[in-house]
Amino acid sequence: MNYALLVLASPASGTSNLTAARFARELVKQGHTLSRVFFHDAGTETGLVSRVMPQDETDARALWRELSTHHNTELVLCIASSLRHGVLDTTEAERYERTNTIDPAFVIGGLGLLVEASETADRLITFGASV
Image 1 (cartoon, rainbow, N blue to C red):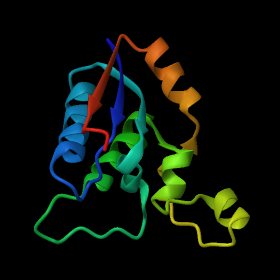
Image 2 (tube, helix red, strand yellow):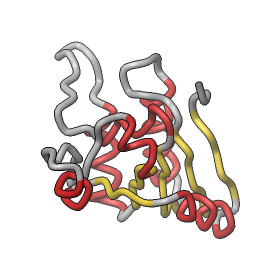
Image 3 (cartoon, helix red, strand yellow):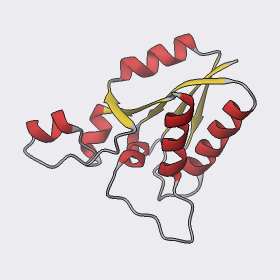
Image 4 (tube, rainbow, N blue to C red):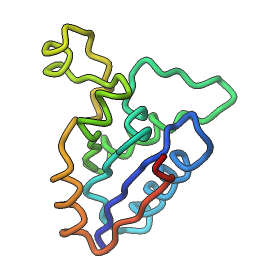
């Protein structure tokens, strides 16, 4: 079965983001396809390279990176939400004369990529609540 995920929660606020990463890992372990994960609202903070988790906590971003690297899952951060949360790729960093702050495992894209993922997936599952 082909899945797509929508992650709305920041890795620092509760367990929704980490639960989503663990769910995604289990999906591919069970033989399902996970072609795209779309991060929106505070979920875009997942791609923030400067975020450091305490040593006694699991780093959700590391789990997402592993998923991207080993299973070719596309990790997309909503462009508008990314800007609001300070996550900038090279293009946006140059435009706003700032520093690149995105983890290389993630890409920035528009809501059209979420729509496309929902149309091509058998299931779209959302983690976290929109504020």
